[in-house]
Length: 135
Image (cartoon, rainbow, N blue to C red; front, side, top):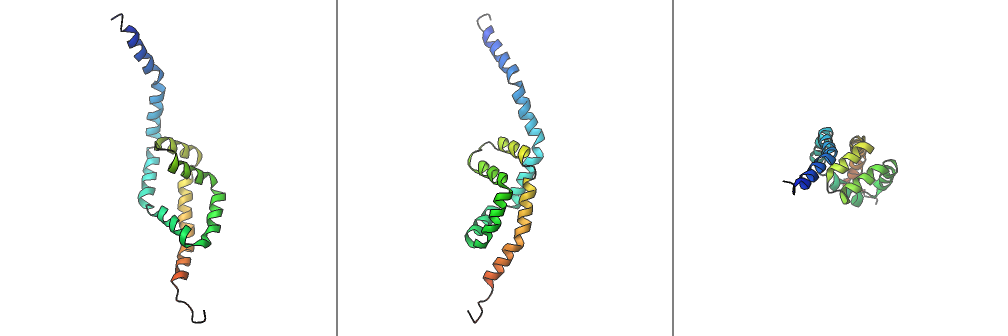
């Protein structure tokens, strides 16, 4: 008993020292539960969005100006997406950073999708249009 008292004290210290950390994790779970649902909805709704962006990059070179404007306007957002894609395996830290820094990011993505859908449709219609006889 006397020999293992130090070990039990050490375990008690660990419990007291890291109680704040477990509380912080609990707070993240409770606070950002809605955010994870939002991200899940985005993943389900816009599953083809990354493919669409790839297609825009390859097919619609006229979109580059629009993409440049997006990059300048939402530079923080593109950095956040890059960090998520490359750096963060644990999404909870990334979600926390996004919530604190870019609360309107999902709205911005939605606005981009709605704003440039017409333009991509117009470009697609131009590509599908029949070739005039005088060309």
